[in-house]
Length: 341
Ligand code: SF4
Image 1 (cartoon, rainbow, N blue to C red):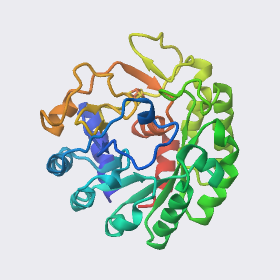
Image 2 (cartoon, rainbow, N blue to C red; image 1 turned 135 degrees about the vertical axis):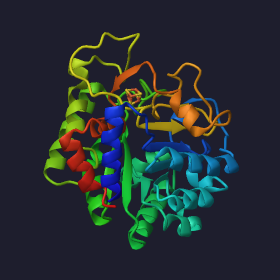
Image 3 (cartoon, helix red, strand yellow; image 1 turned 45 degrees about the vertical axis):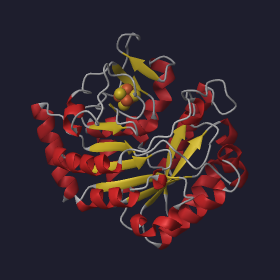
Image 4 (tube, rainbow, N blue to C red; image 1 turned 30 degrees about the horizontal axis):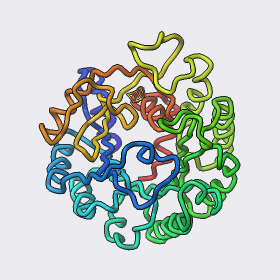
């Protein structure tokens, strides 16, 4: 019913050209209790920002009024935010789906909140040596324990695997773990990650392309990968017809060939711990005079990010979302089957 309502609003907004922030990624803090080697924050000056609790609760009200149907709570580690329980309760109180990304370490302190989630996304990169190579000692145990807890509580769960050179051989482990814990697998690939180019984690593009081909084949055999076969195809073809950059910008690249239209800033956005809003979680800093929700309402800020200089990208999570908002039949069928709520 909820999905049907969203489909109708999407169809209406396509006809009218209206902007609706169906999905919001909300980084409630950039503070973390791990220090993963490939993390963006590790390569930027250290940050210690907690989004203001009162503003966060008002922001949720504003999102609900604007038509948001899904909020992804992210960080840093969102469970470190002092008002995380109230924020999740407010989101669910408005009937908005709430996903939460976590490394799993603090799950036991927030079980009542976990119970309210639509989905718990737990970072897991592979077996103990592979996971801990980048994420630190003890981190594998927290992740597995959190996945088991979510299974016992019957909370839908995803494993988010950051794939770099260090764990390219971990796909079989991830599949068998996901099957045992009845979880979906989200792949983030370190082909050209900001701050880690040339690092021991970065995957050469050809290897990245082989990875996407492998995942597409595995998915066709029924292995529990979340992103659609259509997005894997876009990713496989990216270096061939669109050049080698990770993101194509209107004023920098000559755009040729077929691309997936970008709906960031029209149907989804990201809000950061410092209050700034960007079209998606990759395009921070792309909008001139980036709006800030401490200075204006959520809706006013959203109206200011529609025009951005970004044309296309090869980031799995947003490619799949752009295909979905383009009403690509394979992406729609996939979303209906993998999100079981
Ligand atoms: S093209 Fe990709 S990176 Fe750029 S704004 Fe759209 S979704 Fe974000």
